[in-house]
Length: 72
Image (cartoon, rainbow, N blue to C red):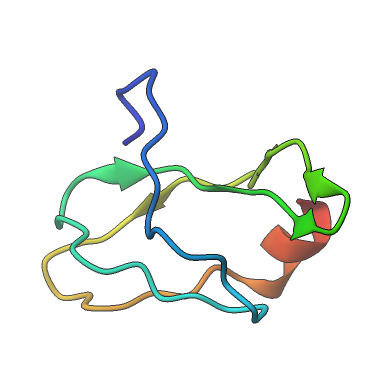
């Protein structure tokens, strides 16, 4: 959440894809995301995506634009 200093995991297993759907987001709340690579060398430092996502009451699912991945 944007107004929190804590980071909470979206899931418990590594994602083996370039896309992931985060469930149970609350409309009207702002969210920030960060990702980290996991491989044989271990877990890399998390990278915070440069956008804040906020769902309004009409939105059920929203994708980050491609430039978010490019910048992050």
